[in-house]
Amino acid sequence: MIINDIYNAYTDWGSPLDWQRIYDKMMEHAAWYSGDPLFLREFYAGHPGWYWARANKDHKKAIHVPVPAALAQLSGDLIMGEPPTWCIKEAKQEESNPLLQVEQEKLLDMIEQCDVNARLLEAFEMAAALGGVFLKPIWDKELSEYPILTVTPPENAVPVFRNGLLMSVIFYKRVREITPGQYLWLIEKYDHQGNILSSAHIGTSTQLGQEVPLTQYEETAYIQPQVHTGWKGVACRYLPNRLPNRQFRGLGLGMSDFAGLETLFDALDEVYGSWLRDIRLAKSRIHVPETMIDFDEMGNSAFDVDGEVYVKLQGVTAFDVNSLTATQFNIRCQEHEQTAINLIRQIITIAGYSPSSFGLMGDQAAVTATEISARERKSLMLATKKKRLAKKAIVDMIHIMRTIANTHLGAAYDLTTTVDLEFSDSIETDMSQLSAVVNQLQQAKALSIETAVRWLNPTWSESQIKEEVERIKQENGMALTDPEVLGLASFSETMPEMQMVSE
Image (cartoon, rainbow, N blue to C red; front, side, top):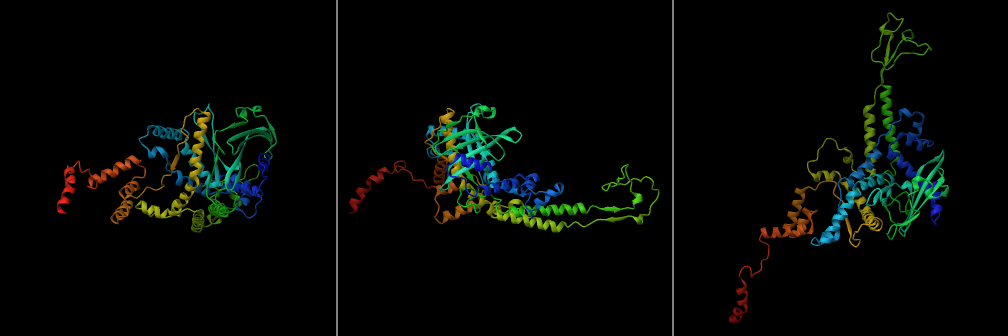
């Protein structure tokens, strides 16, 4: 197995005992995610009892329902369906500082030019299927003046974790086939000192093979054997889908949304396969005497069983209608539909999502965002967990990209500033409900004006919030005015004299 070759050649830790099982499970989930019947047949070949193992006998009649891919897509949409908010923390706190505002504009420009939001949408969908992905920055001055953010699936990486943290990772890629059965492999090791070590190998589909110079082939000639990114640490990040991984505990790898659902996926495909088989068998068949069947020159029947209109057969002048019999089986439509819906509902629920996320709530229309949030609560809770797991890795990745831009692309980012990320809500806030809550808390003297303004306007800057608070105080007569402005200075000065007289 090539992963064992890579692990043994580029690490000093030895190959983990469960790596074969880990890789096999990734390949299984990748087959379901792809939705390609060919991949499913190839993976389950030789696995008795599976629908897709039996499907190898009849390729044409096997059918796949792409519920796994829909699960992964839903995960990405819930997290990155709306673009997040990026900012420099210091710029948000000190809006009057022009240098920080320039840094904010430079950050947003890099996010847009590097298409970071689109890459993250891709990453979250892929992570939901495969358990996690790697965010890897590269740079190429001929292609872009910004670092390029790439998303690498876990089956193309061999990570080394220490105490749950990524210590190093080896990326491998099959570049092309040199000769039949002989491949050019590219290896890139990101170590914990910020280096990227690259090498090329000539091997097979299962063995790494002998190392060759990078300059020997055009596809790898532009790659340097060793380069320092400028970052102090591993210059890439692992984005887990969810933790802990129940099947491979303690290894640092995330868990796929498909974990434990493989048999249900297979059963759902079998139900739909049986349903379509009923439809095929239910086609009306007419049984006719042999004298009514036309034959070709080879002696084979030329009767078209799918024909809707039959022409007069050669040599037949008359026939008895009673000699014809028709066969048409019933289609168990309701039974198949109920079974399929039950399986889909079980899959969605066990994966951690709400059935309503897949439109399984009937025709009842939600009137308010509050009702939608109630129905989608399970899906939203899962999305919140995934956001919390991913935030630090994503923010670190932006720091790494800014460092690479300064070191290798001539940029001038202020690396002492801090990048912040706020994910958007998947469902629009119900303003009527929020206003009612704010009103009740204010009546109970449990909410300040500033906090209320922040709740109602979460995207506002500090200056906008302060200005709005002041306007509210002025309009409601709550602002304190300087006594000198009101002409009360003389009155306040005579107060001591009046007190002495009274004494």
